[in-house]
Each structure stands twice: as C-alpha cells, then as structure tokens.
Length: 181
Image 1 (cartoon, helix red, strand yellow):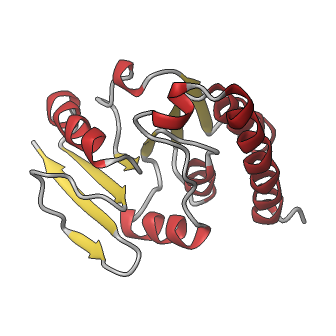
Image 2 (cartoon, one colour):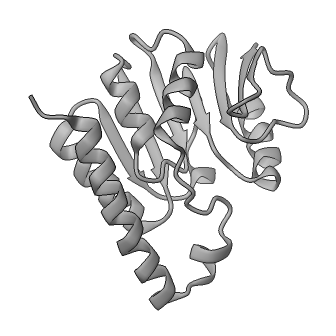
C-alpha cells in the first residue's frame, strides 16, 4: 500500500527547498510580502483542523491560499465530496495540482488565481491560514457571499475580528466558527 502521507511529506520537503531557491533567485515582491506567504501547517495541526471541522462527508471544502494542498488532500481522504484550493503562487499551484491529479483526480481541484476573484457561495467548510490584515478582508467576503444556511470556518493561527469562535484549540491556535444566515 502506498503511504500517501510519507510521499506528500517527502514531496513537501523537496518542494520547500526548491521553492526557497526560486524565491531567493526571483526575489519577487509577491513571494516575500504577499497577502498569505507560504508557511506550511504541520500535519499535526492540519489533522486537528480537520477534526474540529467535523463530518466532511458530502461537504464542499474550500481552502483560500491552499499552498501545497495538504489540507485539501487530507479532507479528500476523510470523505469530503469536493475539495477546492485557490493558490496565487504559481509554483505552489503547480506542485499541488500535480499531486491532486495523481492521487485525487475527481475530488480535489486546485485553481491558480486570486482568492478575491473566487466566490465562496457554495462552500460548506472554509479553511484559512492568512495574516491578520487579510483575515479582516476575508471576513467581509464571507459575510457578503455565503449562500447556504451555514458555513463552517476553520482558521489556523489567527482570529476573525468580528466573529465569535464556537471552538478553540488554544495549544495549536485553531479557531472554528459557525456562521449562519
């Protein structure tokens, strides 16, 4: 049996080294000062985020700034109906899209683009690991766009300014929000 997590971890380490070299060579402003610089979550944290999110079966999951795709891949393995990642960084998009096509062809879709141009209206569970200034803007986007009866939001590390978390993991700094219409 293929050990998916070991393969993903190995690929991630390779990609981190590769990305670091590219960022140093390219030294683009976006790579160094973007809205969500690439800081991968530890697998322990991702697993806890998914546990806190609850039942994923038949849910549409969206990860804004999906990085290497680890949240989406693990959500797909846990039974999410559809997992969508929005990633602005081309190299992260390329890496995660290759992994998605190999292992999760019909369940995970990675979109290369800007999260501000993608609607969250059909999302059941939203994952974010964004800087505080971006979290403020995303909160407004969520409240304006979501159309279902409720949306579950899992935030890694940073709190939303005007929403009250329904569950908190203080040790790992994970915040769950349930926003209803």
